[in-house]
Image: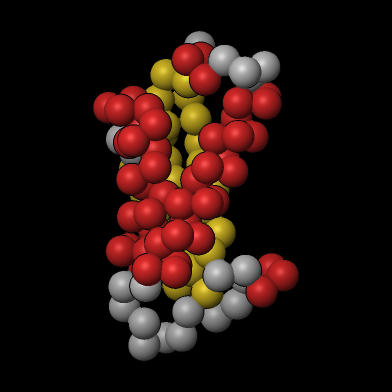
Length: 95
């Protein structure tokens, strides 16, 4: 599970980097992290999907504070594109 959490953290950092680029380096323009969607490449009997995606959720709160608190979906998938272990998407509200 720890490896999955690390992958989810990396996904969150990549999302923040993409948002930063789209906002010309102004992360303060983000007024709220609205929602995260987390997908974990796992077998049907793996039940710790929410714990894996906590890795991404924790990054959002660590970086944005209360603005980073969000709604979330965490689901298991039998496979993900390119054999990825975890995929995370986000919706950010901006000024």
